[in-house]
Image (cartoon, rainbow, N blue to C red; front, side):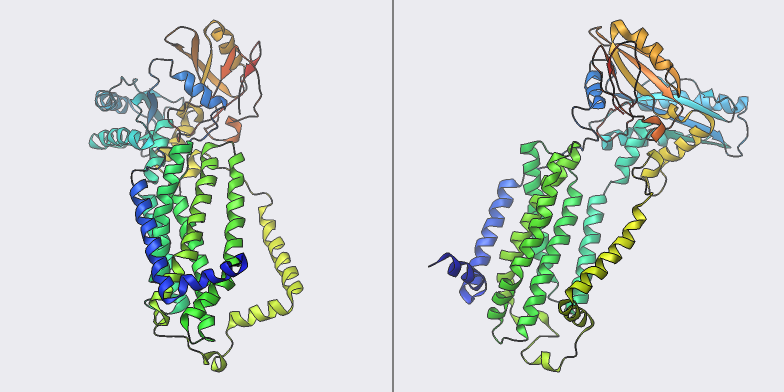
Length: 513
């Protein structure tokens, strides 16, 4: 048998009376085997916000040589509800909170100190960081609970700072993957019901795509572990459901058209497979190749997402082309109930809107291309002047306590107080680096934090005027050489926001912006 004949017979084998059952059996056995082999695969624990060779990542690694490297700082910002100046009684009440804060965090908090206008006070403390932001969030939650259990009349106390931001970001995504998956399934189900007006048909592609999604999750988790990839598994589910449903719609729509011409539903399904497989394959390969280009991304999370998403879409392709057709063949024409398509119906049916549109597009393709291109160009003009990137407070749809606390802090203190920058230098150069850092425009204060355990490195805390994540806090970077190594933003966990700055020094240095 020639290759061309073998290829043409594949859809017939998938949809024939015997071939459909054989295909379904093989697919089920393969799925069960893969589920069993990959059942222990787990998603990556975190997603790095910066490349491994970036200066912030290097400083994070160097910070492990200092005592307290597993600690992060948080701030308790207190203001009067009436916007007035804090009284002596208010300050005494805030001071009384310190022992309770110490008992929750296990670290010694500072005494409250006021802003220059006297309208805000801050208590600084440290917390022991968990393995990720989700674990750290429990400590931040306990700290907020302690403040809620000991309220001060007329005073609002908010927990903010880098560690609190990381905890709030983790909390905002708590349960998000499940919610996102349920919303995706709901939208897909609704579209299928509206498209085919059948209480039965929508279940078939949805079940196939759902199984493909679960299999894609196991495969990408395994690949992520083997290749050291980092990615957001929730995004992959959305891609698999979206693409898989799209492929299924193409196949089933063509199947319905063929049923209006052919009495044998198996022949109609085979013809639909032959007619749509090239389009489905082209659509899939285009997206997969685009995603694979993300392997050149420098951000680990972006690179991992490209590879894992490409794997997920390939699994969706296989599921729709080799699992859905035999399942439809076994179910028969009745899956379209109550509007079962039969030969001859197309003669009496009126042309539908989209059918008319499609006919005119095919008749005059050049006009359609020019008109579509002009419309896209007009819509693309909205990109001019668009700003890219979010600062700390803009990362939340509904303002978190840490974001509101940062805004309160910036009204009375320099915004940089919420997340001081960390600079690491050789121990014998700390004084020079400290002097150079203090001369940088926008720097308010430079404070030594001690030496590494082996005495070779020194750490400095730099407080700037600008808030974390803002353009002024992240000037352009430069590439320098030792003996100076500088980074801004303490990065106790991969998802915690960070910032970087250039630190001029009397000798060459390495910085990133």
